[in-house]
Length: 601
Image 1 (spheres, rainbow, N blue to C red):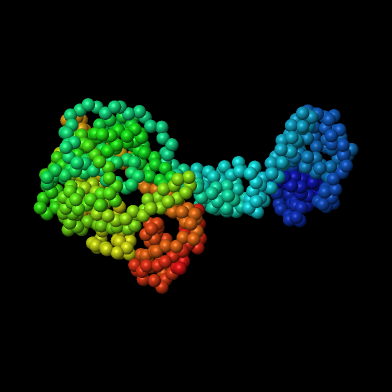
Image 2: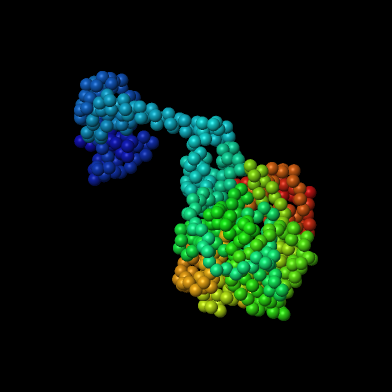
């Protein structure tokens, strides 16, 4: 019976009863008094207990002997106390209650106690010892982490931290123990600090969630079908040095310009296994350390222009009007013979035939687009390669040969869109609305500013203007080896030309949606990876110095572009002017935050 000076259990802690009534007043070990209901407490001993601190004097008893006698039996608090301690007192009651909380020798509640068997006790004690050992090992591990003194045996413990750094998990016990934010950046920084990772780990690939380890489906052989023989024309595939998937080439025949594009749609038909797989990837990934092709590697071997003696192609024959606009045109399935050139090699021949004639046509077309307020922004570009974790960055100079090829590709895209629109072919058209103000920037700062005013392009089933290119309608059509919607363009053109069924608007919309969900992520991954390896390059060349151009001034810092690295960065210097050239050096790199700290030499 609960009465004044009784010992009771309240929220797993001992308390002494001060008074009874409608509510029972109890006093806790910290002298705090609370009023509780009868059902909120458990009677341990009726008392009298003079003061609560008296129960801390634990009596001496024969716990092992008593429990051996009652092994496997159920008993009461008072009976077990008599057996262990020879009496039942508030102190002995509390001692047994603490044994219950350990849940090894006895189990149950104060009202009903079961004595465990020796086998049960041995098993539970072993488990408890194991947990204690694990706890001690964990605490020692965290102490080493805090001291930045980890040992090789610690590395398996970082798996969860790596998951956070890779974006596969949002929580990590290590970060919580260190009172650090649960974020991919924080995890990345800690892994670098502890030297679990080095700069060679690019976490953005796994963070993106994109597939990079591919198992491609098989492809059919190239079908034997009617093609226009254009092998008498000298065709040139002009690309950056080291390009591995040449998918376009150019020729000229009198006043007609020919743009030839690789023809994988001859084999990769709508909803075939290879088509479905390409739709899932949506684009070829160009990362400094690896390329992940959209199509099976053998597709490049078969269809890459100039990789075989003869190449199948989808060819766009284009005549220009006097004002430089596109006039008459033809689109045919063809066979061509291609010579591969680098931009630099083509540049040396830009004043020789047939390049000077091609260049003259493309310049006319460019002037036509300039008159339509096409946007021409030429900010620095580089090629970043990683071989055995060593980074090389090669600037890509501006060349007339590049402009020539770019204009040819725009011409082919406009031609494809015109053909599709004229023949009511469901099609993925690419459009871009004009900026609020029309500018014609010529320096880095104005181009940098104007670029931010441009609205993103969209892909839809209805033709519309592409203000950035200065054309009334447009579709990307020249990269079917590496962009899925370009492949869809080819599938639709090929089907129409061959008199076969074409996909309807719903099917095209589904493909546009599937591609859009991936290509944005892929572009972001490429930007992050390029920046990661650029910063690694600077880590590998800590004495680097280079020229920079101021492109934007803000209240507390300025934005610069470093042309030889194609790197945009901040510099905490306000006393500069736009387009001012500076000589800068690296003061530090934060690889996890993707930041470089620069100062003026």
